[in-house]
Amino acid sequence: MEAHQKQITIHAQHAESAPVIYLPAVMGDGTEVYERCRELNCPPFTLVGIGSLNWNRELSPWGCDGTVRDAEPFGGQASGFLDELLNQIIPQVESSLPRPPTWRGIAGYSLAGLFSLWALWQTDAFDRAASASGSLWFPGFIDYAHNHAMTATPSAVYLSLGKKETKTPNRMMRHVLDDTHAMEKLLGDRGIPAAFELNPGNHFAQTDLRMAHGIHWILTH
Image 1 (cartoon, one colour):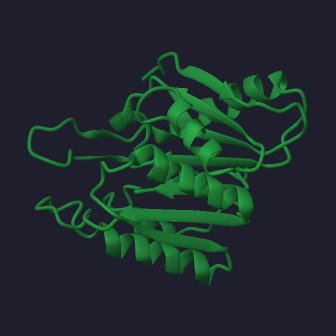
Image 2 (cartoon, one colour):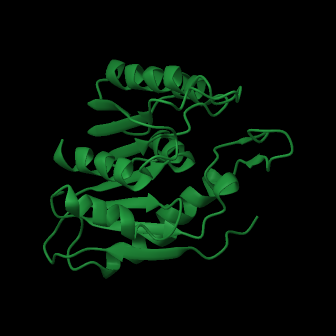
């Protein structure tokens, strides 16, 4: 399926070379996340918000049923979006920056957090990744990660989850804590510095702040 036009928003307030982090945005264009990052006194960086995504289609690595009966199934078109990101969005963005980035990262919340980690197995374009409340419950993902080599070894990966996210009757999501711990262990076993934070609340609590905490961590480690 042909990708639809993405909304690209560049957030930066510096002219020197700095890291650039790509954020497939849950809602909006990443402005709220960038504001939370500034409140956390993040080091200088450029945040590239990518909006207007078809969430279930373009961020899922393979197709599967929806999370509840009659829900939209996951379309499994992450490869197409990653190709667009690598070959169109990144060159367009970085050619517009005053200096080349010092390094490139990827970050995301929920299904975009899953995408951010999955991308590390597909490309060496990203040096660091942050997955906030990532959908690591996604069927088959942890097995896939265990059974495949990463394309490159990232220098830092951040994981987080809300403490109440396992308190759900949903059969697909209730093991998300175990899956996130499994990912943390996998990264550690492969010698990749990783952090895992548990946050108060459920999946929908303080989403922008949680994402900003993840970005702060990969910027400072």
